[in-house]
Length: 399
Image (cartoon, rainbow, N blue to C red; front, side, top):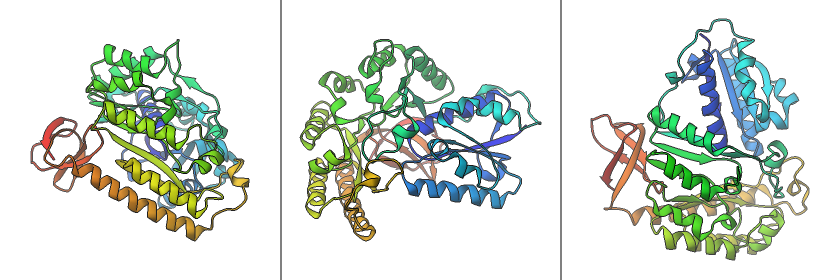
């Protein structure tokens, strides 16, 4: 049988789509490889959100082609939509298939493979955490973002299909599912929004942990956040920020202000006091002055996030921000990145310290050295000693 390795770059939506692709390939008779050395074919599910991400993908393709000259490579995802012709020039690339055609990859590979046998769908490895796509696409066109150019059509998955997928993952042994998409706060299907979908999942499934990926502050309502009183919903919220300066948010064409953001955080903490709140921030957006950066840094400190993901501004072709004047010089961007990373580390330390000595439930996902590693519901990484195999189990420990 042909051995295929799927390599995923970027967002949780890509991770969900890679999982789905792996299941389809396994169902069609392909063996899912776990290491590059095992693979005859590699599928790169790509990201195009920054030029750095694209560079890493090109490097990975060239590196694997050099190590294994007979390797066949298929490229899919956002980079495939953005620059198909460029990717086709890279070594060993057999095909470039866009986001909307990912479902055609098994058939494409079948046409280029000759040694396959039917194997059961359950051949897929068990995952403690599984990603479930509930929505795709965004048309808001924030001034810096490439996503509306590569995933422009919004579509929400039918609730019955989502619930069936969750039940399948649970039957396979998954303990936690992550609901993901491009803009999941705008989920709408058959008259149901995200709140109604979560209610149905809570009522119609028994999966132990449900995690919701990125939301935006204007999407949070008391009735939606109120669902988190159910302990099956993991008390972790990823609320996109991008900047703590209102003037920068305006140039970014974001749909909220820092005051709206502050109120969303206050709402979460009033309902779910132990919640982890993480976010993304861009450093060095075009025209970002020292005063704007200082305002942003101060706001981030005020919010006291549990985790902070920092990205240097990366101009993407075709976006408004790429044509804006007053680009910030690279060295200054790097200094701002380092400052924000330092703030983020302080916030993480403060958040984790308040749980030392408390009992927490950990979903064990793997092993690091001689310790088991997993995450609490509010996304604190924990290590557990012990010789007994507890992988893919939820255990209660004292942090």
